[in-house]
Image 1: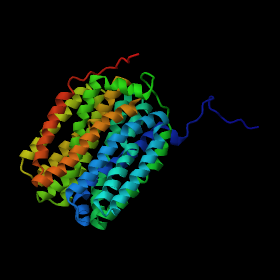
Image 2: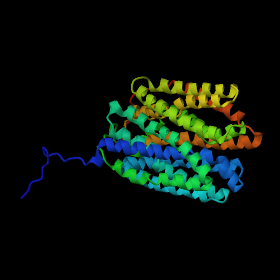
Image 3: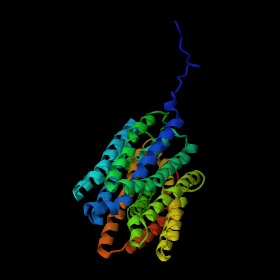
Image 4: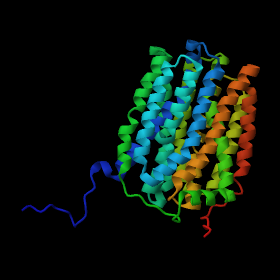
Length: 407
């Protein structure tokens, strides 16, 4: 009888379960899901013109998408904490792909709100980089955790750089409706990649207890509340710029190519910004890093509004804001892990992300309302400046230490 070689009585991990494969698959999911979503701003004008909608109709659908993404994220995070991220990512990716495809087929504002708003929003709750970050927090040792979170965020940014020109190329070659169906085909790879996230050895640190107990403890902690409030501003900034920067630039007389290039530049430079944020978050104070990021955003918006608009200033703004774009994610999620551990990180980060998405809802929706009412976006830029300064102040009192759990 042949005895299997157990190599020192230890099971050999299959290659598709190795940590490097898990991280690679997670990064690809972040690239696809975030990249596809950030291309939606390119469809504001061509899809609205094709269907005869005003910009408020498209903006409202994207606002619903952001709001539902946020509302569903705590539940998706809790399910991922309990049952693992693979099933959550697979189901979310499938719903996400379906919603994007139906956006291209929508003939009315209601159909667009259901497809691009409800379905895509719910799909993003389970099939987005937020679940990937929570998984990495449990799969990667503490000394490399901030780096891994920054890497996942950077890959999401790289997706923006990839999908911005890709989406514009699809629109130019096949029209807005067909382009959305083609982007949906890219998102359909997410469930396949998600199978790899079922591997790896999870490490849960932090106090044991129920999810409800962990959430209650967090909501009673002032630093967690301040962090949640600050992330509202991040969502407001990102959603407003992603959705309304392309039409803002075309209103200034610039080409669609410049608008697509600007979105791509934001994604490209955020690859560096998000990665460096993850590295710096492992070395220096995360609260001070976040405060500096929000203050720098306010300065970038102010310069963009004051300086004369030209392709040069647009691309310079895109590069600068790109460095600050998703650089908030790694230090924000890292602070949650510092304060509460990783056992319930999915749901705790999900609640903070809900605040982010409420901000995103108002950033997208108010952008459309202000434009339809005034015919310009200037008021929104100044509101973004004020919120950036407020967020810089809010992060200063946050305490970076483990929370003592109440018995």
